[in-house]
Image (tube, rainbow, N blue to C red; front, side, top):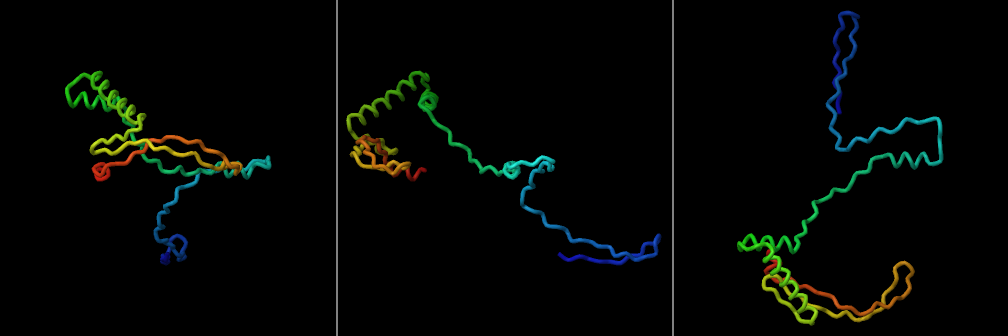
Length: 157
């Protein structure tokens, strides 16, 4: 940053003091720190820890949480679109999902056009490790629901 020095006469004093004009400072992008407490006469062993804790910590930027759509929301949308009572639409949606669960319990694969395929997969028993102790642990066999998205769903998202 360059400084400009100009000499002007002060009529009252008869001297020519140099006038210093500083170029404008650039604006800092850093956030200002919070003022710290003045030092007190008492000192303790925890003073550095307290001073470090007093400094502001920037919180991570939070994004908006996605909204959760429930069966009641689905039923209300269907009732509105098809001009039917909400209770009737809720009963239909509940029954559709109950049928899906029944078919999955029976071990059948459920294909919903435009959405994807739901199926139950058997996971065999296996050996694992306890992460805290490193001890070998037997993990029992289980059944898991697997979902494979349809091409239409993948392209829509």
